[in-house]
Structures are given as structure tokens and as C-alpha cells.
Image (cartoon, rainbow, N blue to C red; front, side, top):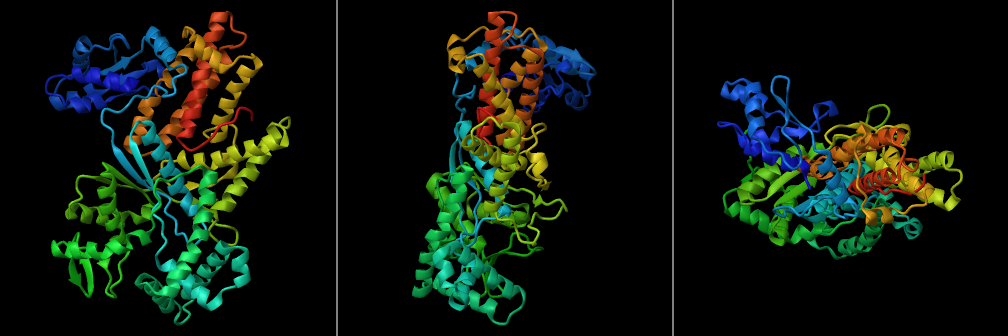
Length: 572
């Protein structure tokens, strides 16, 4: 049940004559401070300016006609024209009772199911994943989980870089500097070494290396038997290394089609765009001029080779034909913004104007020096080593806080806490922003961290253990939930906000909206825990009511964290 939707619909029906219904509905939102009620309708302020009327008089008129029952009574007029809504305690109690044991967490099927393709992670398979892949992977995974939870059809697509210039560098390295023993021992590490060797020599300006690597790429694309055989030999090792990282992160994909999959389609893309008069020849290349004042969008280079732009257009064509999506999300670094603006413009001109193409841009992970996060040696931090360090740092916290746990249990908790800390530190940021990577902050037991939320969940489980009560028994009893204490009521209101929070996060494509909500929920529980005895409540009726509130909070925290790809543990 989406409380905000119901209130917006009611206020929409009460929109004053001459007002914009959608805008008036959109001005209803959760109150930032409980003293102003649970929700506020602020549309009379803007509408007063538009209509040239007194906002407070408009608010008075709206108050008379709006029907908020059974959720709430008439709103209160405050200040120059705000309408404050306070939900009925009886309705809150019944709504919460309905959530006990509800696996859907109050979410209902959408009026219209959408098909959403989420393009995320997308590493180059020829080299190990590094910290730069973290943001795309965890943001994309979270958005896919959120859309799925809302009842939409989601296609997770890992658009692998398995065909580009990096393979040309590896092929050059293989033919000129390979170490067969090293390859036998660890194929991915040796291939990564060869890639870096070629890259370093090209950067150093070593004569002939760049042209030779390009020639190897061209031979691969042209079907050269030797290069194709090597490519097919290398790919399984590269994919296996990626799969190990994804498995540890709990990330899955429905489709993993690399650039090589689309290669046979590229010539037709260029031909079709040219025949339609969308593309034209310019200085030996085939391009599309999105804006004559700016650089064109190249779809075939002057040497006859295709590029990322061509592949991306073929990918859109394939996705639309295969899944008929309503929306395609590209979770890619903000530095690719100009590319996607041109790509989307060309795709729409080409006829793909019914699908919503969205670049979900994100900022950079920074080190303490506020520069891109790197090792002390100046190398980009490998993702596998980052995860190992996260678990090691978490183990220190777990060992310090839970020495009574068995070693194997502490290892499991450290894995959950460490990986959760890394993911949450990323997802709790506004994705557009850069952020500083800081172990101490991300593993803190207080503050807006995964560790704090996981601890809140574990603390609730400890209440049930101490009382020797199973949460399942409380759910089956479905006790009357009493909300006479302000802390009880505040917790109840927050639990019920989950559906509206997920809708907002999906609309704005921002997982940090979920993290902010979970942090607020955990804080509300902390207040409740301090002010409202549970096991030592004044009556059995009150104890069962508070146990139900504890269980609802725990299940909401667990479910909310799962939408971020983060697990919980019963003991910390």
C-alpha cells in the first residue's frame, strides 16, 4: 500500500479550479518534521501565485472538500497555506497488522508493468576488474532489484568489452612477450600483464607498437584464424575471473552479450543509416551530424572499422527487437555523457523514439587526496583486492565487538559486513557526486553505514532470542499494534513508507533514496528501543505489540538492504 499515492489522489480530487492537478498532487510529500504531521500538502503556495489568490484561503477551501478517510481526518492549515496531514492511529495499527508476515512488504503489482533493460558493469574482459567498475556494478544491480521489487520486468544486461583494441594489445603482447609458464599458472594475470605492457609501450611512444596492436585487432575482426583461435582460447579464462567477482558480490545477469555478438550486425547498421539519409560520408568516414556546430557521431572510421557508436546502435536495435523495452538504462561513468547524448539522438532519428533511453551517470571514487582512488604505487585498485581488504577490515571490527562468536561465524559475519560496507558507502551517495573512500567511516557502528543498519537488524534478533520467542509466532498471532507512545507511532509511520520510497528511487534512479530511508528507519527504531521496553513492557498485550513492531522493522531493514545487494546477520 502506497500511502503517499492515496493522499495525492485525494488532494488531486480537491485541486482548486484553474489549478494543475498533477502539480498539486506532486506537492504532497512526507513531512520532514513530525510536529508538522506525517505528510504535508504544499500546493496552495505555488497555486496562489499562479491564480493571484491568497494561499491560506485556497488551503481553507481545499480542506473543506478533500476526503482523506479512512487514512486521516481533515488536514490542519499551517502558516501561509500549508496543509498538514496526520494519519489516524487506528488506521496505522490496522495497516501494520496487515504487513505482519507479508512477503510483499506492502508492495502491490503496478498498474502498468514496464520492461526495463539495465545495462551495467560492462568491463573489458581482457583485464581484471578494478575499483572503477564498482559503481556501475552496484548501482546497476540495485536499480534492477528496485524495479523488480516494484513488479516490473527487468533484463540485466552485461555489455562486455570482448572485441576492442584491448584484445589487439593482448594479441601483440602474446606474440612478442608472453611467458608460457606464467600463463599456465594464472592465465588472467598473464594476459593482464601483456595488456599493461603493450599499453605502457604505446604511452612511452615506442615505435610501431600502437600500429601493430591495431593491426592485430583488425585481423581479429576480419576473421584471421590464428587471432580468432587465440581469442577463443583466452575468453573462458577471462569470463571465469569475472564470474568469481560477480558471485562474491551477489550480482547476476540475464544476458552477457559482448561486442563480438553485435559485430555481424554493424555493416547493416551503417548501410541502413546511410540509405535513410541519416548518415553521410565526411573526410573518408561515415558519420551522423547531430549538431553541425559540433563533432559528428562516427559510425565507420576512415579506415573502414566500426566503433563503439556503431556497436551501441546495433545493441539498441537488438534490445528493442528482442525485449521491446519501455526503458533502457545505461549505468555508465558521467564522462561518457556526450557520447550518450549523441547516441540517443541518432537512435531516435533512426526510429527508436518509443523507448526511453537514459544515461544513469555517476561520479568518481576518490582517495584521501581527493584524486581518483589508486594504490600507493599509483595503480588503479583491483576490485578483488579491494573486496579482500574490505573483509579484512570488517574482521577487525567483528573480532572487537563479538569475541564470543566462533571463528567460522566471525569469518562469515566479516564477509557480510565488509562487502555491505563497500556497497553501502557507494550507494548512499548521490550517484552524480564523487565520494572519498574511507574505511573508518564506512565500517562505523554509528552513522549512515551498512554496519549500523546491520547492527540494528541483529539487535532486533537478539530481543527475540532473549525472550525465547520466534518472530513467526508473533506474525501468526497478529497482535493488536498499540501506538500510544510517540516513538511507537514514529516507527510505524516510517515502516509504512517503504512503497513510496521505492517508487521515488525508481523514478529518480537513485538508490541513495533507499539508503536515506533505511537510516531514518534505523534511527527511529533506536529511539523506540530506548524509550519503549519490549520484553519488560507493562503488559503482555503491550509486549506483543512492540514485538510486532520490532519484527516489522527488522523485515523492512532486511528487505531494504537486499535491494542494495546487502545481506544481514542475526549476530554481530
